[in-house]
Length: 537
Image 1 (cartoon, rainbow, N blue to C red):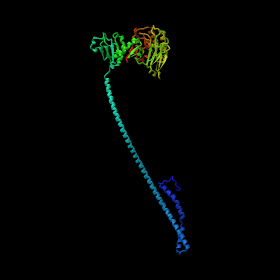
Image 2: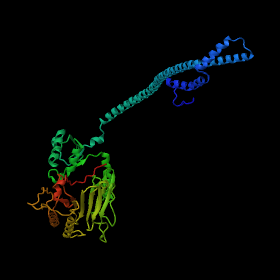
Image 3: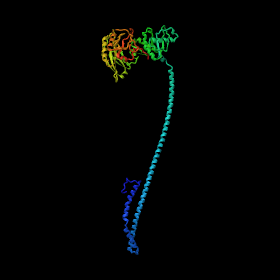
Image 4: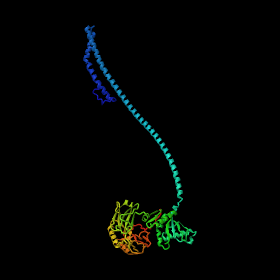
């Protein structure tokens, strides 16, 4: 394929085929024409010689050879002409054949392309149908399995629902039948209330009498009893009354206010107690008898069915964040251990040589949860029986400076100059009042009576309810300290539950106080003097 580029040759292209044929055949045809074809002169000469020879006789041998030469020449000439004619015809036929071949190949190419396209389309459809059928089959099988499991799960749920409904019905039937202890939770025992003749066979009269006790004696006009029953007494004394209230909140209000009966002449001999089952009361009486016989009744208390130290029994009565204690009676490095609280205290460093126990001492008990929100630090313990701590809220500027102090009473063996005590305390107030909000609590052994703890006509301070009308020298010094420091007492000024802070055989008095700056009074939402009431577990 001389002179033809294989890369450019396309057998299906007509033009390429013709070019190929011409490139192959043309050199050969030219060669034949050059070698065999004669001119017109030569041809006429041959014809003339041929005619002359025809008039001669039989030639000689030499003539025969010449004749053969002439024949041979003629034969060669005719062959040359025939070759030329044949070569032109073959070329045309060959072109036609190549062209036909090209057309056939083009047709075959188109047919093959269409066939392949058809096969691809049919194959895609068949494959898609096959995949779709397989997927449908698998999905159908999965649905059957899921439906079977769901059906089984629904059956189990129905069984569980039946059991739950049965349990709810059983529980509802149990709830509808209140236990004896639940009924007693709303009961109150009233002792010492005189028995009237009109109460016999008339429960309504007894109910009216206990409602009058609550209204007139405790000043709780919004609370009324549901029912009241007078128990028959075994002796000449009036029988106790079992009264039932509407809610536990009403009962709590009554128990908190029952101490007011002591100051009421009409009801001073009436006592209100919690209704405790007979078994518990019997056990508590036995424990109290044991404590009395061993001489420990002043150090221990009966709480439910347990005997606990008196201080711990007091702490169990409330859930407080910070507790300030006076007269801890601790020696050296002793501490008070109360679950859930941390001790920060100041014990007396010098004790009397004949002392059988520690004396004085102040401390704070701070709940563990307070440390999650506040940084607690010891601020000052330089003065005996005066302790300052600082509570700084984490990530905030809110700060409290708390102080607890103890001033020994007049005539104490551990006498302390009250003027020096209040001067030291005033100095510390001036020192720490800019650190944060100050609050001072403690046993001041000071009775201020009706003395005003502010400058009348200058300071606008809410009035104070006075229940201890006695005044003495310590009280005057205490009032002077309050006026100089712009502090005032919260006792009887905030809240509705004012009470005595010291009750002994000698009488009742108010000697323990909580004092705050004048500007802090609006921030105090409530103030209570709680009477310790040890409830059973």
